[in-house]
Each structure stands twice: as C-alpha cells, then as structure tokens.
Amino acid sequence: MNIEITPKKTDGLERLIEVRVPVETVREAEEQAAKRYATSVRLPGFRPGKAPAAMVKKRFKDAIRQQVVESLVQEAFKEVIDREHLDVASQPHVHDLKFEEGQPLSFELHVEIRPTIELGKTQGFRVARNHAPVTDDSVREQIEQIRDQKASWAPVEDQPAPGDMVRVELTTADESGEFPEAREYPLVLGQAQAIAGVEELIMELKPGEKAERSVRWPEDFPDEAQRGKTKPVRVHLLDVKRKSLPALDDAFAREVGDFESLDGLMATVRKDLEEHSTREADAGVRKQLLDQIAESNPFDIPASWVNQLIDGYMQQYQIPEEERERFRAEFRPIAEGQVRRDLIIETIADREGLKSTEADIDQRVADVASKRGADPGQVYSSLQKAGRLREIEQSITEEKVFSWLMERNEIGS
Image (cartoon, rainbow, N blue to C red; front, side, top):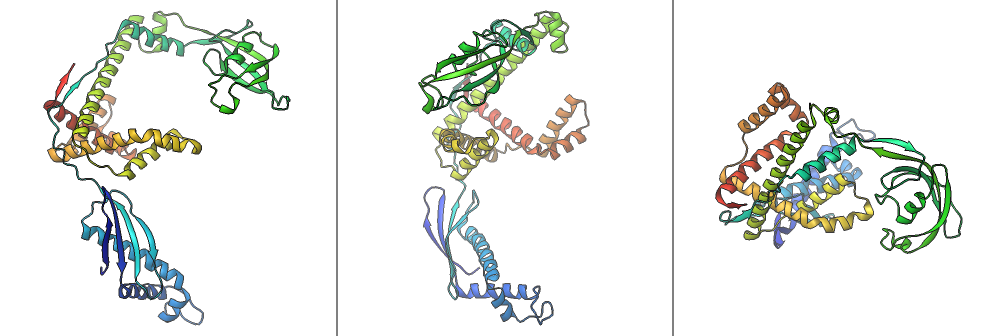
C-alpha cells in the first residue's frame, strides 16, 4: 500500500506513528467503494445495480466515505506493522484523523508492542522453602471448623449472648428525631455485624421485648459522616437461637464423610493440611525464584496487559463503580508482578523448549480420566467444551519451567 510512515514516539513499548495516505490512493478507494454500492443499491428510475456510479457516489457520499476511512485505516495499520516489524501487544488506537475532500487521509496510530526479554540470568539464585509444620493444634482447629459447620441452632427464651443468632427489628432516628419504619435484620452477636452499642442493647432484652436508647457511633465507623454521633435507636428482639455443637465422636466422623472413626477423620484432616502446606511452600519457592529473576533482568511490560488484568479482577470481584479507582491503584503493583512473572515463564519455556505438547496434554487428560473412572475421550471432549484445555496446557508448561529452574538454583529449607 502506498502510504507515508513517520515514527513520532518510540519510548519504551509505546509507538506513535504518523500515517499519511496520498490523495490518489484515497480517490481509488472511493471509486472502488462507489462501485460496490452501485451493484447493490436501488435508486428511482434505475434497475438494481444499474445506477450511474457518479449518482451513487453523490447520493451515498457519507456512507462511502465512512467505508473508505475504515478500509484504508485497516490496510494502513497492516502496512505499518509489516514495514516497522512491530510485534503488537494490544489493539491499536487511532488519533487526530483528518479526512477532507480532495486531501490525503492522515492519522496518528498509537500502538503498544510486546517487550523483548533477554533474561541473561536465570541460575545461581538461592531461595528458602518455608514449609509450615502441621501441628496437633492446627488439626484440632480444622476439626472445630468442621464441627461448627455441622452445628444446629435451637430457639431459646433467655437474653442473648455473644455467639447467639438473633432476629431484630431495628430503626434509628433521623436528624429531625423521627423514627423511620423499622427493618428486620438477622445477626450473629459478637461478630461485629452491628456496632457495639446496638449489640449491648440487644443483649439486655428477651425475645419479644423492645427498648429504646441513645447509642454513640464509633470513631472508626466506615461512614465518616456518622463517626462519633449519638442517635436514638429502637430495637425489637424477635427471637434468639443458640448454637449447639455435635459431640466429637465416631458418629460425628461418620456424619462428616466416609470415616469409620474420629481417628480416621483426624488422620485425613492432617493429611489434607500437610498437602496444603506443601503446595503453599512450593508456591512460595516459585514466587521467590520469579521475583529474583525479575529483579536481575528488568524489562518493560505492556500497560494494556496490566489494565486488562485489573479490569478482569474488578469484574470477577464485582467492584462497585465508586470504588474502582481505589481498587485499580491498590491492585496495580500486584497485576504488574503477575504480568512480569507470566512473561518470564513464557520466555524460559520458549527458549528452553519446555512448552507442553499434545502428548503431555493427552497424558494429563488420561490421568484425570483414570482418577474419575471415566473414558479419556469423553473427559477430553468435556474439558474442550468447557475451555479448560488451555488451562491444562499452561499448567503443564509452568510445571516444566519450575522443574527446570529448581534444578539450576539452590532451594534452602
């Protein structure tokens, strides 16, 4: 394509390129677009496709010009990428587009390119493997969590205490001293689900009783406008339920799962905690290795990739619009680290020939199928339909890269 290309900015990974499409090329594109329109549009007095090109061009001037702009910008972008040998990281942006009749088409193309990563040093690092031991206390704590999940709640007529579940109608006086209609709330006392003054008032009542008292809002209340204020509060305690934990015995173990005794449950819990501790220790080693490699091999990362990752997490966590700027600022260092580590893994995998193969994926699928007692072909189809094969491919590649790194770096205890 006959275009003029003038690079204006080449800082880091950003490229700002001025593009100028000559009048002759623009005119030719307009003629071609007009011909395409002439073969399909209807004009009064002419059979379909028989209207003169000049008349079509005049009648559909704006639509033709729009089509010309879109096609020329797209073709010019491909030409720029080819001539400048750009490895594009994200969708380019067009700025300052000028397209006046009888004049060249010109615009600025803003594009971000992938970084060139050398990784001169990937060996000789020393990292610590922090393996948290599994103690009897940690096993008991996990068992207590399971026990708490199996707890039952029974109504009581006593005054509630911390740990009890209550249902209350609650209302707070407004600035004029009027009480709006009360709303019903379920609360577990002692878990900071209500401010301390309200909980204290609730715990003075029995089911069915009502009370009114002025309550002072704490100085660290999330809503700054309410901090330190004292307001009348009305409470109607509807009911109280108290938690009853199951006995810690063999019957409890059988209720939890396929265990014949409490000892069997505790042994399984210990094994699960040890496996989790091992995974956490391995993850810590991998993070330390990648962090040290990143520190020893600095390189720029595409800002668009970081923003894309942040946007993905905001959508996943359903961050409200008013909190997005704060989330973006706080999460940016984490996102930058993730993008940098992903690029390091990808670079080592490419350079050392460690990318997962079809045979690797087939074997992993076969292992999954064996554990499920299922047909490998059916498991493969299911994973493919769910879009999980790419995840498996990346997982295998990462395993190969970390195995390669651990053989070449010192892992201390």
